[in-house]
Length: 286
Ligand SMILES: C[S@@+](CC[C@H](N)C(=O)[O-])C[C@H]1O[C@@H](n2cnc3c(N)ncnc32)[C@H](O)[C@@H]1O
Image 1 (cartoon, rainbow, N blue to C red):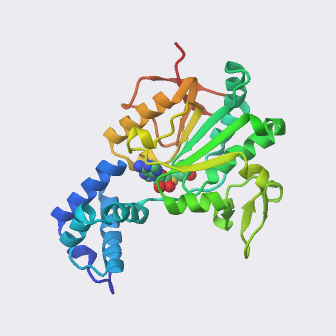
Image 2 (image 1 turned 90 degrees about the horizontal axis):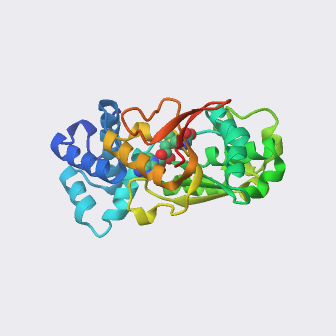
């Protein structure tokens, strides 16, 4: 457990029953699954959040989440405190290349003249979204205007960073050689900004994957990337999100999950597609 020394409340003193109710609230709103390790991390961060607010009683904090006029804002603040936004450019790159070299070409043939739309769901600070754009330009620069790339996340802070497109060293740890020179320009002190050409290919929007249907993208996509997001979700939430993705994919469109994630026990509405660069799930054509 993270020591909470100096905080208004010791994390280990937060009563289990109220803690459980708060975690259940987050579980319903955002799909979070609280495994034991995550629960302890949540306990420590909750204590820190209460300290920021000058509260020392978890019951009072719970009432704030439920009844206060600021409750929506506080639930969002808690999401920000608990969500893991870690990401970097060209993470699990074979999937990025599967999109740029295979899926993109196939979908252009399937829907001639239509722009190919790809959704990076749970894009965090945007590295995955921009990686897709760079991979398209590397594969065929003439396709710049033929692809629309949409990145979404629930985290306002992460999206702010995604929109600015300015990154530090940590984001570049898996970047192919030469890309930094081609697709980035110097920004503030040692940080690099994505060039306008790449930024023009992507758009960002905020959405909770567990939110009401009206908050989610209404258009259909040719490919959906949702990587390293559902590992934090409980089974029922995963099922709900996978059904959402099925609805939002064009027939023959592809779903790409993280390498440690699968549709096992979640859905039999997709077919397994073994492509040259990687594997994916495909919405069947009728
Ligand atoms: C670990 S990052 C994954 C980033 C990227 N897809 C990758 O693989 O590198 C997980 C992201 O999922 C987002 N997330 C978690 N629950 C969410 C929800 N219910 N709706 C939308 N985004 C959510 C978090 O804010 C976080 O930015």
